[in-house]
Length: 344
Length: 120
Length: 171
Image (cartoon, rainbow over all chains, first blue to last red; front, side):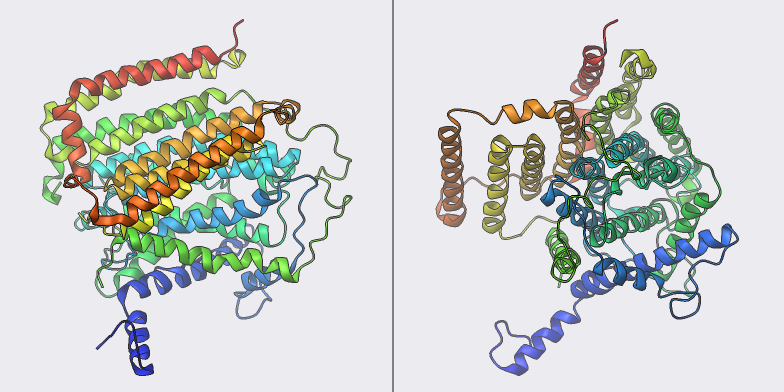
């Protein structure tokens, strides 16, 4: 019997036990909450380095404890925390220190609405998809502010290029998910996944899957859309002057965004948690998300870089027109009744 | 414990800040943060930085920012319609299709203006 | 469809404080960039008000459009202004009186809203409006207000082309 406020130690223990085993606590702290998020992000940094190494016929992290250097991200984190944080001359100190924390906050916040299983979601709100898009639309402004705050030319140029690139691919990203919203009839991410029980949306909305995939690769600044951080040209782009703990926060924010976008692809196009019943639902979700993350990481080792003005032009002309035409195609597809067998 | 989802989001936001905040504040205790005018000079591949750091701006992509604001609003209206598309009769959705088509010609002209580099 | 049952007096006062203090800082900031960031915080406070009023879609719309696009445009425009001009704007003669007036007005607004919020149910109120689900927006836009929708398309096109034509360099 749980009594609030607790008067005896036994009641306090009962209250604590009740809170710890409650569904809310487990989803917020453990899975898909904070612990799972940090573990997967740490795993993704190691995974990317190993994968790129194998593509480039190298070995990658090997010695940092365990088989295949699995503790390498931990070693990197410890090193970065103890490094000195150098603030550039006449840089704006509160912005320089505060913006990376905001980036991690904004990358981690949309995970509250992404459903990892039928009941494994922190907050099941009715406008889930628009919530994720609203949070990701705050990124370009933060990159611009951080690039301005490091009082230096390389970051400023890189920040401007990054701003224009992310802004250019934001609209095709939104409009291509409109097909999914048309097919599912709801913005609630749990309902979108539930509507894919019989057929994953990648089949009727294949063109929007392609547009969305390209757009998120540009949003994440991954090769071949890498010019804001082109190493031969801009050293490291908008985070050139970040060092130590600041760099670690930005790095974590970038990999959290990678995981966020991959899980968004899984939710919108690959059927979320649906899979044969021999594995639990969240496991299917994580498997699909890691496959998507692999396909996002692989082009980094394969393709050359695209020039930034061709990049921005392509985003605004070809991708936007394909996304808009795709809306009409989806409307035709829904009205032709071909999808009636699968309940759309 | 059926919790209001917005309250869950607020709790999640607080937990993120509380648990990642130490990553920013703890290094201020145990790592050196002494300003040094030579080390803190902005990085320019070894040479001494010259000129104002923030004075050059690329105006070539400015029209895309203006287009972004407008198409942001368009996207939001399309999301509002898209939810109830399958439940509406087709002649109601025809208005939204007309909405998109009416924006097509201005989009084309805006792109023509934006791609012409001498305009900016 | 879940109605928002967060204790509305605490969240109302917090959101009011964020919005008003953000707006005052936006006017008072010495560096324009800090002012733009304070403006963004103020917009986020307004989005919180929309969420509190049972309009979550409008809250997301506010964040995505205002904080995501308009603030970026403002920041970019601020960076166009050279630094020398920014330093000259500091030498205002009646700066102290202007800022005192702003702070007093802000504190007064905060105090009134705090009293209203904490007075709770002892104020004369109307019955709250029914909360609309998001799926009501589509039928409303197309069945009830089709003509404003088309006018909106023309308005957006006019805004877009007008901004571009005005901003381009005349040769």
